[in-house]
Length: 163
Image (tube, rainbow, N blue to C red):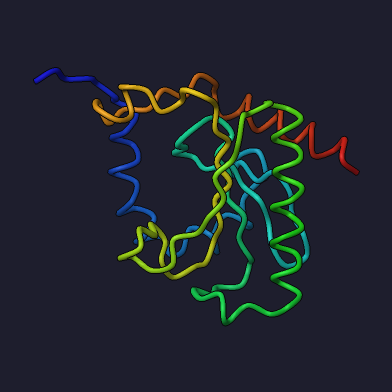
């Protein structure tokens, strides 16, 4: 068996327990500085943020501030703002990064794959032709070619141009 080393992945594995001990990630992030938390945009009811452990460059999430786990518990205003932020994030990501497509989704509940099952959030994942190479499918390793802070600045600039 070949071994592909991805040392950065250990940060994610170790930090999962720290996240749970420190309380809900999506409740804590809005209290942090935008650059430190990688928050892209804040609305009155929701915010967008880069995923610190992305599937691809530009992988981001949108969540409401309120600690709600189920779609049925969102207010109409939260739904509107979440969707508005997702659309803006998709437009900015498309302009700045030119992906070939996007995945958009949410994992509702731990058995559905939610890493933070008690706070609803949506993922927007830019995709490029061939981004699922042997490294991902066989080696279970992802290559992220850009530093998160660089991606954060790029997307913040693109969002500012949408104003």
